[in-house]
Image (tube, rainbow, N blue to C red; front, side):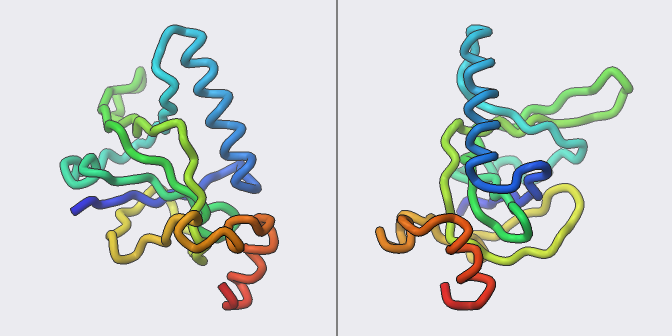
Length: 145
């Protein structure tokens, strides 16, 4: 069974911000002759690699709510110029919107069990998926979604 990661999406105010950042990074990678994957570098290296790479995703918290995810393709480790071990989370270029779910601030990343993940927005019906992001966020905060 897949295990997931969850992380704050620092600097993004919306899913659109995240999508633009991912698209920009993908275009830069393709211009350099690389795959359009994006990477996120983190200092702490996950220990449960096999579970994460068995269909896991990185769930992004935007403005206090889990709002999107990207599929984890690979996790590579390296030692930085400062001698500190780090890892790159290699992510698929598609940003998948999820049902919003409140999440308090935390540092770094955390494991996210399959039973705790929000459903993908597409599975909630066309009416919910067609709502503007701000409206979905507000309805979730009010406990109506």
